[in-house]
Structure formats: C-alpha cells, structure tokens
Image 1 (cartoon, rainbow, N blue to C red):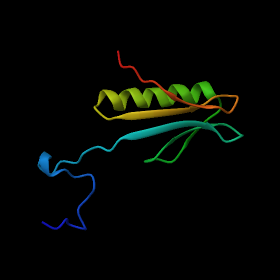
Image 2: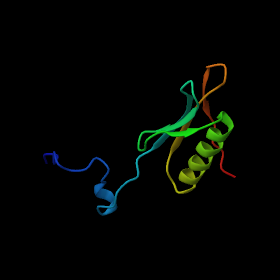
Image 3: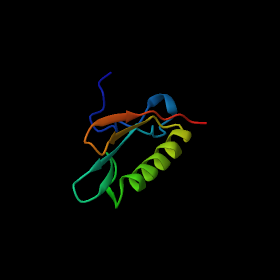
Image 4: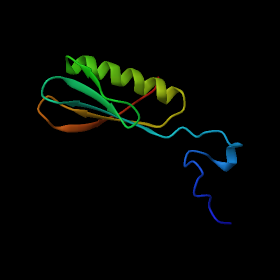
Length: 90
C-alpha cells in the first residue's frame, strides 16, 4: 500500500481518524530585554522576569501533561546555562 502524500502526519489509522496530539516542547529563555516562553506551536510570550516566565511555562506544561501530552521543558538559567526541567505530576 502506498502512503497518501496528502494525509496529515497527526492522524493515526488506529484511532479511527482522531487527531493525535503531538508532543510539546517549551523553552524559557532571555532575549536580553525580558524573558520569553517559546513553543513550537505558538508565538513566544514575553514576561518581565524569569520567575514569571517559569510560572507560566510550568503551568502550561503541567496542564498539558495532565491531559496526556508528552511535554519537555527547557530552561535558561540567569548565568546563561541551559537545563531540562523534570516535570513530576503529583
């Protein structure tokens, strides 16, 4: 069987045509004038402080994870180093 070149990559034949939600990657980074929360699906949201950006990113990450989506969260520390945050649902 030849794959359909027009089929959505987010459809799974095993789910009766329901859309499979793709994984979400979030990143909290400084752009020099403020802190931004980036994702591959939305425009970056800007926050005046790192703490506010972290709260927003964690809130979204936990909500998406509870809804069954795989989420990765990457953080820039104030010294410029990068880390991946561990998300632990309670």
